[in-house]
Image 1 (cartoon, rainbow, N blue to C red):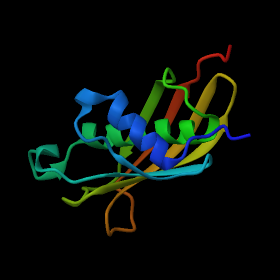
Image 2 (cartoon, rainbow, N blue to C red):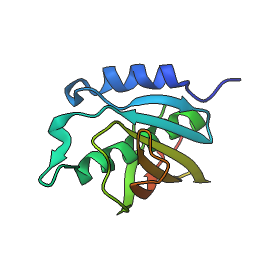
Image 3 (tube, rainbow, N blue to C red):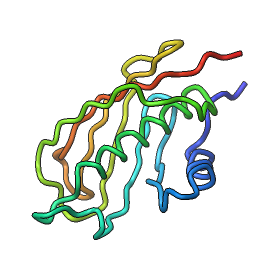
Length: 139
């Protein structure tokens, strides 16, 4: 019995479910334990000093965990972020951002994941986040 969603199913939901959100990050992998998203580089993501903005990286961290949850437990669109803690480690390159999320805890009410964000083509992360989501009770 299939419960989790595929990357293609999650991408379709993100495009349709958030019509005012512009171009959401692209889910490249989502297998229930790990999810990877790509945020295409756009000049409007820059802040003074020529670096990609913190809110851009925070949105990417939040989205990749949302995708990870869908791939792990199935369609739960009312799952909500309860905490997002991020450390900015180095200036990201003006390039696509890649986020990889890994499940730390999958409980009945809370889902916690670890996220590393890097610039495309770079090995070292530019940010690290821990994100917690509240999962609505199943009826």
